[in-house]
Structure formats: structure tokens, C-alpha cells
Image: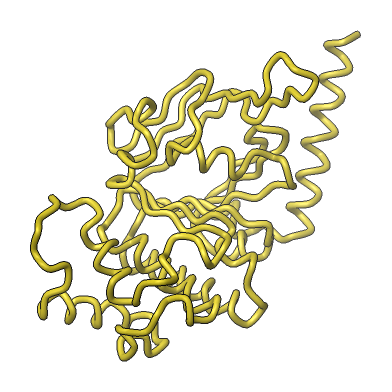
Length: 264
């Protein structure tokens, strides 16, 4: 479903601020995979998301979605393949428009543009049915301005909009990090329900290790632009936060020893 092959990316190359953001990334997701991604700040998690979505172009390597090489496609041309929810509850929706109008835009994202009215009676019923799955009562507030919604309500709407057109890949970029604990738990549970119901192939970045352990069938750890751990199935189920931290220390320590050996 998703393949990231031989991808490397360097920021500010040839300057004192040069930074290797991604280094020889090899990543494949099968259809229906739900992969959580963890790592410290600067590990390359969001950069990887931006390369997959087309915000950034890799220096080398390629990205394939559903056997289509999308490496040279700009972000707007990949929107038919990808749904994305950002960390900021203000991103991904238009605050000055109503819930209904935002949903109409999402619904039409990968459809042929016409001059017909964006919201028909039939489409409005579709919107209500979809909103009802969120269990937040938003189906009764179609004409409410999105800017008046709480952060949790807005992230729930963003999640729904990202899945509305049945994308090939769902990208969740720390989408609960800016919420208070109760709202973060709400969106975490909603994420689990939505992904399980839609069977969407999902890649989710998070700083919350417990969340990374609780969600999905596979976990990836990144460090300094590289994937240093990739576990799934029973191996993932057996992990704890303490074991994850120990694995990080062991892998980083081993890598430092190898670097010292190479440098002599």
C-alpha cells in the first residue's frame, strides 16, 4: 500500500546549519496496517510525514502509494491518496465556515468539480450519518461555525474529514498532542474506532509512548533520521514503556560503539 524506498533528505546542505533529516529510510506498509511512530524531537518523524504527503521532496529515493510512484507529485495532487490530521486543532479545517461547508469541501476533494450546489439534501443526510459516528452531537450542529468548536470537537471533525473520501493512506501527525488529557483520550479512542471501522492503512506519529503501545499492530522508533526499531504482532504486544526505553538506550549505545569503531 505504502512504500518509502531509499529516502534521504538533508536540510541546509553545505552550510554550517546542515542537518541530515532522513537517512536511507526503508518503510513498507501493507493494506490495513496501523503503524505508530515514536522518537525524540528531531528524530525525523514529522519530516517523514511531510515527504510522504508531498510537502517535502527527498534528495534521493521514492514514495509509492498503491503501486503508484508519487515522488514527483506535489502535495495537492497527492490529496486523493492521502488524508492527514495535524497536531494543531486549527489546521485542516476552515474556522470561518460551517461544519456542513467544511464537510462539503472534504467530500468533493477528489471528485470532479461542477457548478452544482455543494450541499444537497441527500449529501446533508450523509454528513449527519457520518457525524453521528463521532458521538459528539455535531450532527445536530451542521450550521455551527467550526471556529466555535472546542479543540477536541475540531480534531474529531478533522479526523472525519480526513477519512471522508476513503484515502489510501491516513497520516496522523501528533493529532492529540495539543489537547487536554480528557480530550486527548477522547480523540485516541475515536481514532481506534475510526481506523478499525474503515480498515484504513494508517501511520500515526506520537510522543506518547503508552498511546503508541495501545494503538495499532506495529510500532516504529526513529532516531536521528533513521528507523532504529520496527516491531509488530506479539513482539509489540509484549512491549512496555520501560522495555521501549531500554531498547532505545541499547540501540543508540550500540550505534555509538559502531561509529567509534569506524572512526578508529
